[in-house]
Length: 139
Image (cartoon, rainbow, N blue to C red):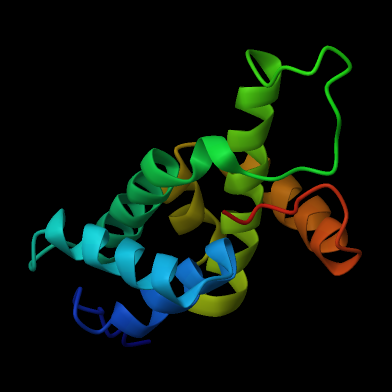
């Protein structure tokens, strides 16, 4: 089977779609695409470009993820900050699978987690996103 490798410029539509689904805003999507391509080598492989997108997203919006959960103390430090990043990674995993068609091992490489973790995230992430529950990860 012949696999056609996508160049970073071939991925621009996929990156924009990911950005829009992650942020829900055209302006934020354009900013994320710009940030991604400013920090990407034009010879980089597909997973490296998407990893750069993830880093740009986390730097800009990752700690502002909205969750349907309330902190009883009114703070969003510690566990809640890591939970927000976790929720964003789960949503990104599902979107990478559904929008870009990346395989589980490629998603694991982008996210930096084991393949079994990604498979678990995909299983539960699809259910949560379908029900619009818990993983409301938009900026």
